[in-house]
Image (tube, rainbow, N blue to C red; front, side, top):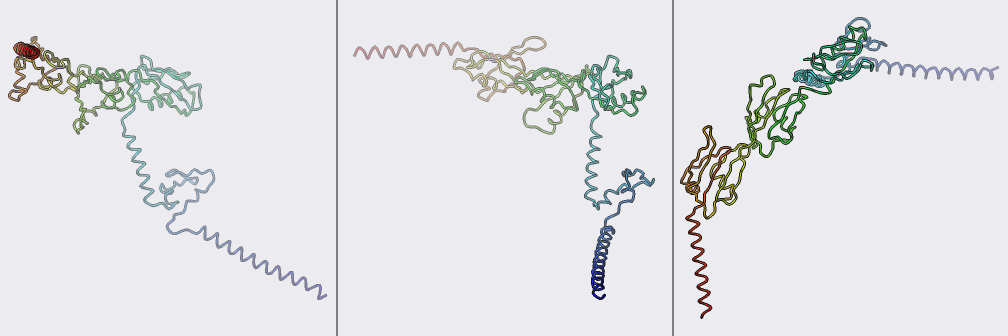
Length: 379
């Protein structure tokens, strides 16, 4: 009998020890769970509705229970400090700057619009604005879009689809594929003249760069005419050398859709007569030349040039005027140098006295040489 009871006592002891270990494990687990669920100092707790299924929790929106959530719950839940708040302010600042950006270009007659209705290809199409400023939507009718921007046109089209009872909440996107009247005409001394589309705010320097830059014979004078006021011509002087605040401000002149930009040709001065390299020389970028500069470009005078009796021929409103110029005094610095204008002609005549003198000296030298040779041969 005692032998039968002994195993039972042993089993009771085993169960007793096992239950003690199980109790300890349960106690440790409970303490751990309580520690994890206990509030941490400095960290705010999320509202209970955040954990509710199918309960959208957005800042400032009502929760599933009807109580609005605090707008700073995200930062409080994650324990974020002022650094994260600063990041949010920077992003908001960028958005504000984008909102303050110049408005998009307006839709004009003849523009081609690419209209996309989300998940409805039957209503998506490419339409061109007619002469009345309207577009004809499939199954919906006409919509006036002239003078609207692309986002405004998208709203007008969406409203039209709702009024036609075709859709309840249409998502419309409008893209201006072609601008018919928003181009800028670049003419004159430009490397690549033509009509260039103006797809955003541009300056004069931007448009010249798009056209390949100024030509070799371009001047500094650039004329701009707005389509809204064709009788008014705006003149801008470019600086092709070292930039200054004033020149940069002039080159940053804003360009409007439909403007015409004309780059004038640089002046030409003609130097002819008894010079080493006569010809026509451009006054590059509208920098005026002087008489001395023109003579230097022509290679300088020849030994027979009549410098004291040069002629400057200039075209005026009353016809041609001829002025006698003493280049000899100018070369020696004893006379005033004159500025030349576009189309001036500088003529340097030949001095017949110098020609006769040079001919006589050559003849004398030749005769003397022959006499010397003849005398030497007879000795």
